[in-house]
Image (cartoon, rainbow, N blue to C red; front, side, top):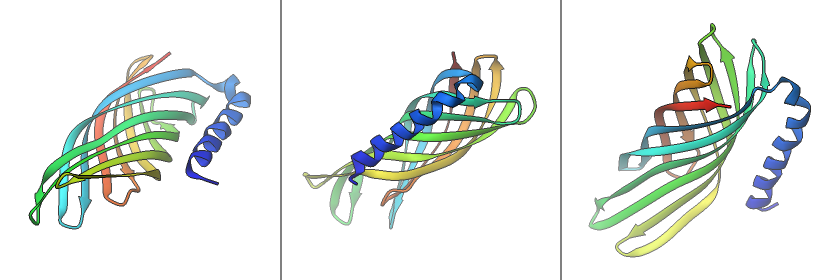
Length: 178
């Protein structure tokens, strides 16, 4: 099964399990944040400030735990410079499909874990020669959020992407529920 077929199969699987869980669901949400991205490979170590956008649907929402499915876009950073006499320019991003499990701690605070698949795109230019490294990678992370209003959360999270270059992002943002 090729990479795109596995990604589509993952989406279909998530949609198939949402139908019976809708009676307990709370609805759609969207979010956006600002992140500090970091990429490391050998002597290469650089960081960048990047945006992220996501949308999700709460599949299960109870007082004990919550589960949601989430689609997202994460800019993994743009890096440029020179090393060993070569000039480089790297730009990376990811579209994601994730399951998110939430554990409420009190009425206004929750911690969560996020895991899924990321369709990564890495564009590389070294001394004018261009290449790209696109693929499907695992990603996951942890976070916490505070309810500001019934439909607005402020969150902080840390995510790692399993790419050839060690890539991680940490950020804060706002999530709006409908």
